[in-house]
Length: 319
Image 1 (cartoon, one colour):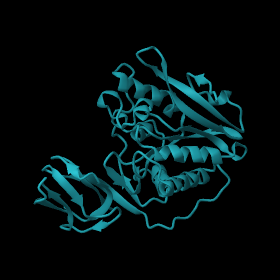
Image 2 (cartoon, one colour; image 1 turned 60 degrees about the horizontal axis):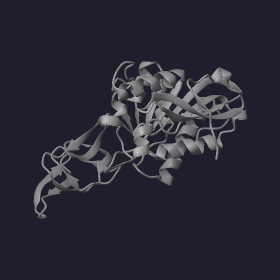
Image 3 (cartoon, helix red, strand yellow; image 1 turned 180 degrees about the vertical axis):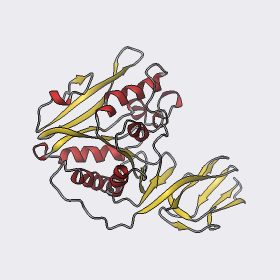
Image 4 (cartoon, one colour; image 1 turned 30 degrees about the horizontal axis):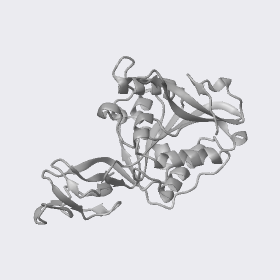
């Protein structure tokens, strides 16, 4: 069995160059006083800077990003690396172990960043993660997926008004990019408030591995590393016509019942187009739903059982 040492802080200057290092990073302690640790893989190249960070599983059931990070770190040759890669395959350890999305007591870690030094358990966890990891970085790529009962296209959230984050987003060769300002409680937003260029990469669906979309996520990160001269390679040109959206929002039901969403991911919709049907438990149609404006389907619900206020689809408004 492999054993990895535990550390209390990341000190890149103390690590051997041209090497890959694996640690457990101590974050908080539980009710028994035992340390809750997160896995961390650090590739230190010929030079120690700049530093790029890769994070996954901020939500405990979002697994595709874990595989993206594992594959990338197995491919990296540190002797050809100009800089350092700090990767965290699982950020939200308690939720990952329980197979759930949210942190303890129902907190969403990606809505409370950068946390608080003196707050509840979720605030402290977020605060220590930002201070022990994110503040060490020059760039951040944060990997996510859809939530339970929903599916996503391969899309990016980025502040498209910032030239640096815009370029990071375009390098992903994604299906869709959504403009998102940074101050939103997300890990990406917390990084950008620290002047660290950051994007969110949405790689598919929860609670499993999807080989095709993992490969797409890996290619996008490879492009960033090539573009920023971390690795001596060329950017892979896109064979996609990436759609850039100025904003996006979810369409919700106002009644409960059994929902059928008729449109597909990446489908272009016209205002007034039929998008979903809601039936009661007897199978009778109780409501039809229509697109409120032109747009593109970023994600959608696949769980038929829906309450009032349930999600139908995520609509992107094209730039």
